[in-house]
Image 1 (cartoon, one colour):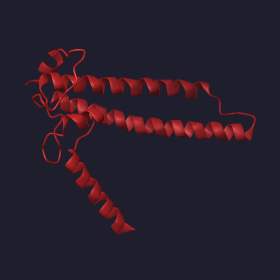
Image 2: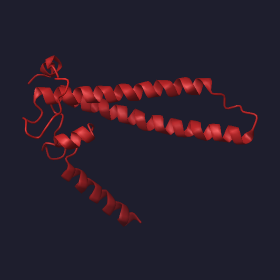
Image 3: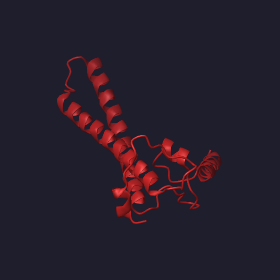
Image 4: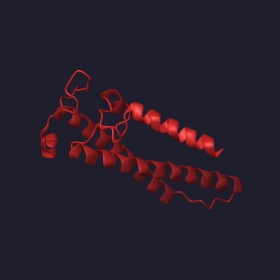
Length: 146
């Protein structure tokens, strides 16, 4: 199936992917493409709101406690936006995988990631089993360093 085929696929309004249908068929791919685009749009809108809020907020408050509180809030907001920026990058990568028809398959094993996992975490790149192996390996390496 060509990437252009995904774009011309019409998604029924009440569609929800299931394990009973062909994995990553055109309708399922379109479902995940739209889900990823909506998520990215929400993150970008939140980012714009943060930028506007930071422009309007004045950190030069007369009370030192108010200033410290405002600076802490700003730092937290900027950390959140940095995490969201990284998330947007992962969403963009997932969208590229949709376009290339590689979406939904484990980058380690090539096996299907699974509809339920992708619905819960559309940017997942590993199957549940591969993710668990990866986390066990990380934990073992972390324990060895301590």
